[in-house]
Length: 300
Image (cartoon, rainbow, N blue to C red; front, side, top):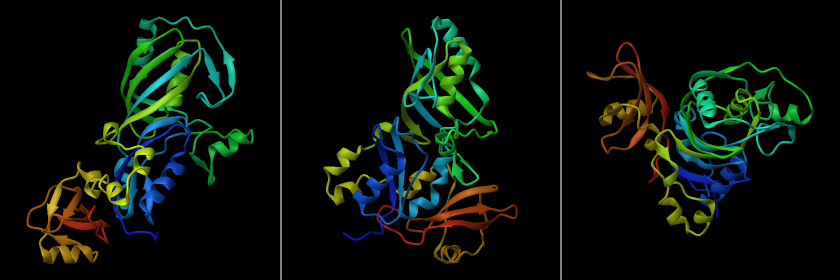
């Protein structure tokens, strides 16, 4: 079947052992979509929510790349690995002698605005090449610490060696690094044993579909699982344009309205309540086109 012009957002429950890009390619194939992109990498070790944008929705994926995320994590105490997770080689084993109160105190120290040094085994690029490529060659690259925000870090359960945590954090947070830092605070070392992403921005894992579920559906049933493009933009103020202003906006022209929200990004609709793009309101109260939807589909 040839590629289709289909637009929308699929909430995928990514399986264990599959890279985010491999999952993306499977979704792209199942929907016969010519254009697709995901909104935040999950390592092969991780499972859970991976929003996939198809067609025109890819133009607005940045909204989710910048969004906060929630995870359920299992941290194994007493073992430090080369990658910071269970896929790496065990480098050091130490005795675990941490009480629940010690763990909870350490977790509180990791809340709020903190700095993380990106791990060598990550997709972050240095001179056009991902860091993991250097790591596999045994090379070390100096990394600049990054500021992230940890909103929630809750201890759900604890055994002698495993901690089950619920985490709500900003974009760019490395849960592996969080696990390693926690282990060092407790004096026993640690690595990330398992990870499941449960929320991305306004989207929740319970709304997601697995690849197996999608494979059992016909094309029409798969399409019914696509969310509209503007589901990515619910946090933005909404502006409705009449036919004249709508035409000018779609031609890339800045337009003036008698009343508009204060400066910032807004989502723009035509009189039929169809999303046509997003715009930026200037200090002069004009709306400048930022991203436009060129081809509409039933899912847009």
